[in-house]
Length: 292
Length: 283
Image (tube, rainbow over all chains, first blue to last red; front, side):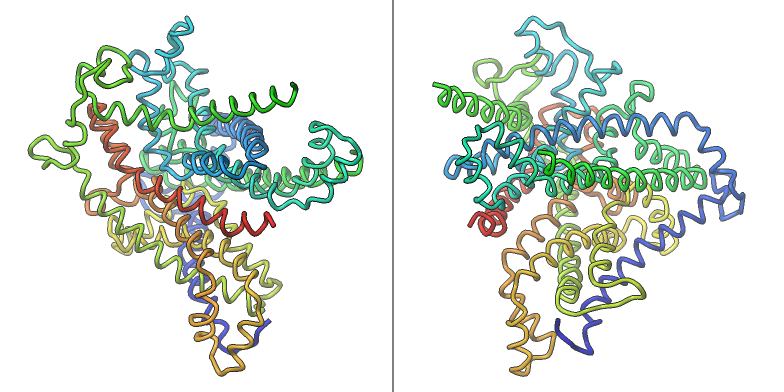
């Protein structure tokens, strides 16, 4: 470590910017959540826990949480399995690997909402290629965006398209950083590819898996852009995620106080969920190598 | 026999995923050359064979709105401006902070360096939907709503955690002896940082820059809620075109034009990721 009187010059500007633009809004949201700020009553008027009492019995709020977490769980599961599989396939490729690597990381780089606009034309009921291609196999057209289950599936397909690339690149980097010795040992012991994967590759990748999953869970629980463009939460409220609902309640209906209290609940539940998930996964992974 | 089957399956899998990845781009590309007869008769794919291609979709991007063009040039420019400004400010602030966190020890109550780094990174947890209302009110009260300064401010703080995350990691791989030698030669910390350490951090800076470009170019939620008429950014503009029942060919052309810079960024990102971290790890 270096020593200098001027060390604060490095840290302070960024820290100050962050505190000003992130901590203030957070504190302000807490204040707002105890206020009755709405279209008719503008200002920080104290209403105590009333907003929270209303939020915990609001079925729409809990429904949106349910939708969000079902979506997140399915998306992250598919993305992890597919991303890891693709990384394993390209792990030992050098020449052709380059081409596929570039191709496979493109989706995570392009703007989700703009791609959602393109996807909307793809999933169009009569003019889109999706139903057309299904027709080649004799499958009747599906009303992708206007019926509940297909709309849900559409959101998941698009999320998987976009973010599998992220898991892929993290897992590939992880695989490339693994030491060679355990694999040589497994080969000497005569272990086949499947046993090598279960007993060597998978346990060694556990920490990177955990990191990748936590990042994806955080990012996907913000899910809203695609919903906004694609389904507007519909049909009905079947694809309404919490972020989308907060946007409607807060910035469309201007129920500022009430939305702030739901935001706080959402944040607390999300943080608790993430902590529990990370703890459980760490424990699970610590046990796995020793029993394996 | 089993090996060749495995290799065959592997290429089939890679091929299938490649098709899935490029499908939306190819669809947008072919749609952008269509006109009425290529769209309203059901899905068509191959130009000349299934429909007569025209340049109408692309031409609308360059035509004046008064003559039936679409207003995309100004938002495009605005997005370039906001992306450049917020990326630059976030890089300056974030790199300085990352260098500080990597080289000096800080203490704030019980918080040490690693806690401060974590504090920066943890800001990514915050969903934009939670921050949007206080941002809206904050910018409204400071008269910065719907201005470039307001947008750049919000974007910069959104990017800071990413820069700090990438650069702390990167500075930790640059040996501290380099700094010590420079300080002994009479450089002050700022000179050491700018003249000695920073020139050795090219790949890290490139990765941080590319990630910043991706995130700020693609940001939608803040762009939509915090800017309306003075500042019009690309993602909300394209979404509005979509809800205005814009014909598919113009829509596809503007979508492709909007993501083109990011496809180029992806190419460089892969290159630097594999040259830097991936290659180093591969040894």
